[in-house]
Image (cartoon, rainbow, N blue to C red; front, side, top):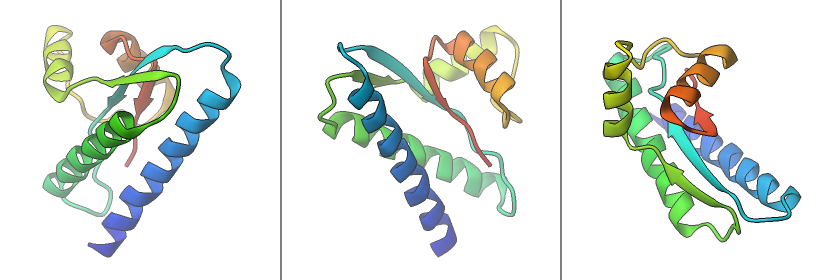
Length: 117
């Protein structure tokens, strides 16, 4: 389980760095929607991957709420993602590359999307 916690911490640090970098380079405040897709299980069970995905969504949500960025971020809720994917008759599975993430981002009206394994 320590490996799992390390992975979550690493992702949070990278997201924090990304959000801070966006703020440093932008001149005016923007609003971005962020979607966190379900992580794909590699070396862990599907249940563990879903639990990690939920933990990651929670952590991103906390970063958004406590952030002091002039840019504003909103997290696409899991229920909103489910409705959208149901509407397009696809599942939130198997997305681990950029082209897939771009397509899912368009469907969810999200400017930022988190994918991973």
